[in-house]
Amino acid sequence: MERKMTMATLLVQLLVLAFLILSKSDETFDVRQHLSTVTRYGAVKDVTANDYEASTIPDGCTAIHLNLVARHGTRSPTTNRMRELDNLANRLEVLLRDVKAKAQKINISLQQIPSWLWGWQSPWKGWQKGGELISKGEDELYHLAVRTRERFPDLFDEEYHQDTFVIKATQVPRTSASAVAFGIGLFNGRGSLGAGKLHAFAVTSESRASDILLSFFDCCEKYKKIRKNQEPVVDKLKEPILDEITSALVSRYQLNFTRHDTSSLWFLCKQIALLEWTDDLELFILKGYGKSINYWIGVPLLQDIVHSMEQAIKSKEENLIPGSYEKARLRFAHAETLVLFSCLLGLFLEGSEFEQIQREKSLELPPKPPQKRNWKGSMVTPFAGNIMLVLHSCLDNSSSKYFVQVLHNEVPVALPGCDNKDFCPFEVFKERIVGPSMKHDFYSLCRAKLEVQLPKDGETQKNKAEL
Image (tube, rainbow, N blue to C red; front, side):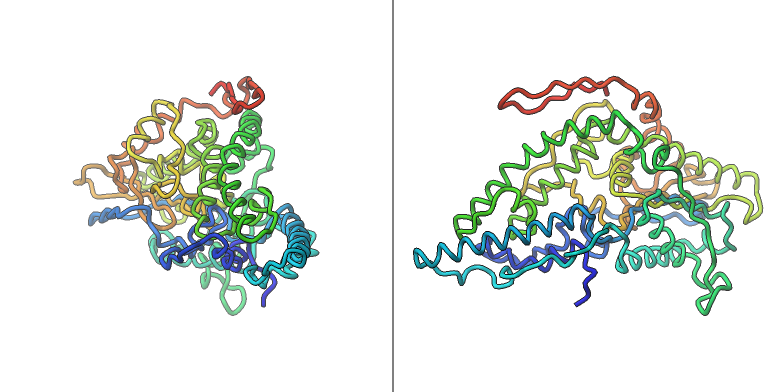
């Protein structure tokens, strides 16, 4: 068996643990779609949160520019996660040894314990490095590019030039590798290199210390402090779920699991819906709608996207010849980048929540299972998750000459700020969606003083951050 498995693959392998707590199987439950931010793209690409019917692009409208914000593809576990799995293997060895000794003393059966637990070792045992893009991740980005070129042939029908097709990535190797995989798919057959007629192309990056377009979460000191101070709050919210599942494990199998063991093994059973919710809760609070600064610091990215659209409109109005202006701006970054950008656009909200964030009001936490919710990490930012903003030029006799269509994971999505339509007049897009965010300046936000009230015994931590 191939040793280079991703964390999501391991979770599927560990699904046998479903029977530890599951009293009745549910054939409609596909665990591969419930792994929060380690969900593979192929598992959720065609899954939509609702029955929204996409707009029909009017006759006479042509795509003239594309903005892409994409997460890197499926990666191997990070070094910390590999270390955690090594520790888990050691813990399992101790727990199984203890329960075996206990069974001999009080004559209890060990048959209910899954046989694969005996002698289990992490597939990454002995690895020193992690987090790199794996072959599956390369495949995700390559085929995303192939589908993008097929979907928008007019945008990618001319010869490559670095000023026509701008490709950017963060300075983390898996994002630049993702950009390369995408570029190979996009320009395959357009060059002169090798049998595949590949084309060399440029991928540029900014320093991680100053990349406020794609690595803003690393550049904003205030955000980092708020996130650090919120982490204990998130842990406190997750504890009851972990305790509930841990208790069930100990009660049924006499394996003396701790809360931390269960967290490492959140690959569990039907209760995976609750464990998924705890991860989604963390994503919401620390990176999403939980704090407005989480997404306001992405304003430079939104400004850059709008500017590129305005330049494309100017080029169209001036009738510049093909090849002399930019047709696509392609960016490859991280889960945080995609989450933030989703929030700036107002995606994955419930009811009147868009109006609430426009008034800078706090949102309720995502509903707890079995209630339905729009905010799911597996949908918002799976591996290779992406958002495309496609600028269309339409005939003058339409209600507007330029329109923006937003696609999330290649599926058109409704914009709350545009009357829940996915095909939005550019002027409306700028006024209702972009405009309210423009009053926030990245540097002013990140320099603002942060006051933190530390929790007293038994109290939930409270933050008094100037937002």
